[in-house]
Length: 250
Image 1 (tube, rainbow, N blue to C red):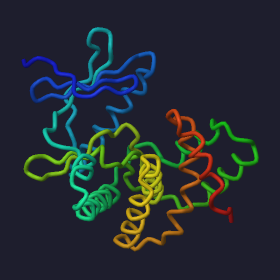
Image 2: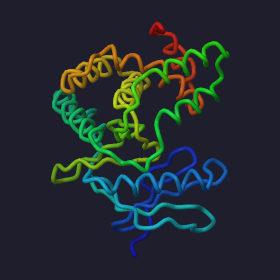
Image 3: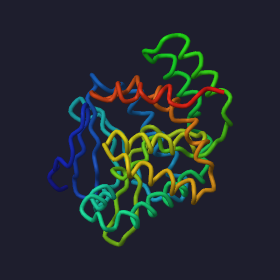
C-alpha cells in the first residue's frame, strides 16, 4: 500500500490519500460516533442512485480515530476551475446548476427529512421565542417534498476528473426535502464567500432553468439562515442573522 498523504485539513477532520483510497479521519472530541456513522450511511444510501460519487469501502477505527474509507477521485474542484478561469464563469455555472438539478431530481427514501432537521435546528438557535415561533410556522406551511438535497452543494464539493466527469463529494448533510431549500443554502454559501454577484447570477440561472419562481426560493432563505446558526463558523453569525428577517412573513 502507498504511503498515506495528507490532502486537506479541516476543523476536527483530515482527508488523506492512500493509493486509490481516500481516508476521512475524524476527531472524537468534535464528531460523535453517531455523526460519523450517519455521514457514512447517508453516502451509502446516495450510492444507490446513478450519481457519480465516491464509493465507501470501509468505516473503521484507526489509531483510536473513526475513519471513513472511500474511492479517491483524482481531479480538480469546480471551485478552483472557476477561480482560475474567470472567463469561463458562465460555462461552469451552467454546469453547476445542471448538476444540482440532476441531484435534486433523485429520490432516496431512507434519508432523514430536511424539514425535521430544520425544525430541530431552529429550536436550538439563539433566537427569541417570537422569532423561533414565526420561523417554525413559516417552515411548516411550505410544501413538503422528498427530493434528494445535498445540504452543502457548492463548487468546492464537485471534483472534475481528467475525463471531464463531475463527481459530487461530502454527503454528510444529505436529506430528502424541498429543492428550493437546497438552492437557498447554495445561494447563502456564495454570499458567505463574498461572492454576491455570483450568488445572484446563480439564483437567476437556477430559477430560469428549473422554471421556479425566484420569490419561492427567497421564502426559504430566512429559514435556511436560522437553521445554520447552530453550526455557524466564526464570523458568520451576524451575516446569517441579517437574513432571518429579510422576507416578510405571510
